[in-house]
Length: 201
Length: 201
Image 1 (cartoon, rainbow over the protein chains, first blue to last red):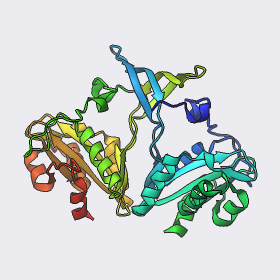
Image 2 (cartoon, rainbow over the protein chains, first blue to last red; image 1 turned 90 degrees about the vertical axis):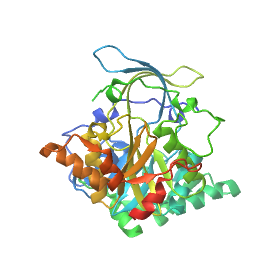
Image 3 (cartoon, rainbow over the protein chains, first blue to last red; image 1 turned 180 degrees about the vertical axis):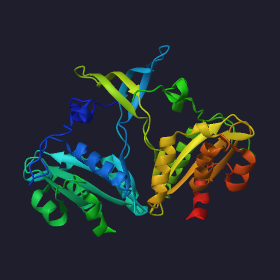
């Protein structure tokens, strides 16, 4: 199915190139350096990979390719393609022999996390992974306060399913603070989420 | 890095649509139905997913997106993009709580498998995964004889590394028959490779 890129938002093809390499960092705060959650997680995963702690990658953006040009003596150029809806979450890999699978979501909302940030197929994918012994969770960032939480998939499923039975369409930040695991920014890895995973396995 | 799509070969955007839906199949042979190895594995993975046996997906083709049009009232169109080199293997997922990671390669060669089918970064990725407790292997198909083998990553590493120490640039089919595990085609799943994985875990 051809869809607009997430919510019709502008796609920044060069987002990775916008990360300042040598930007001054305040010693007491590692967040708020203008990086998106995706960039922070990619950096964290690069660190984990370099230290041979885990092999976790973000999957490529799924694209339906329609037309490709093959000019002589230069790279093939895709001339027409469309964003497809991903059938899985964005991140997966291996840590201590375990299958790790998660999605990362950030919200500008200060008091709650809107469940509409997830698509049903992502939840279904995580349910399948959990049933098959995978370790699944969401990494949720509240942009305004620069707070990052790991929220277990099992808790996410409860609130997700509840919204179809008269429950709320969002999860209160209080609840995420209570059930989730706050991840404090560090220098390396930027977001040390595997320290929380250690408590889950 | 911008590269040509694998070896400059033509990219068929509609390859999935070329699979005959109701083609007559000889009762004694399940192979040779004109499907590529990728199509056969995608079908197998769909079956495993439907039966809740495992959650294994092929990763999307990595694409560097340069230019996107956002026409009003219709889907965003990618107008310029390039194929990127994948930094991992193509398939991964979870089976019985274990992390599964593999790549699929087919060859027209009748007597040996050329190691040039792999890229160094794919081998390095598999080495990292094995070190972190993942189950890694190659699925190799000899097209002319319609034979499919699962070849353990540890064996692949031996022959891969050997080629840089005076060893051959290919693995003899005899060796793949001896060290690998032949996977016989079946109706569902088309390629029952997880039966072999059961012997590895």
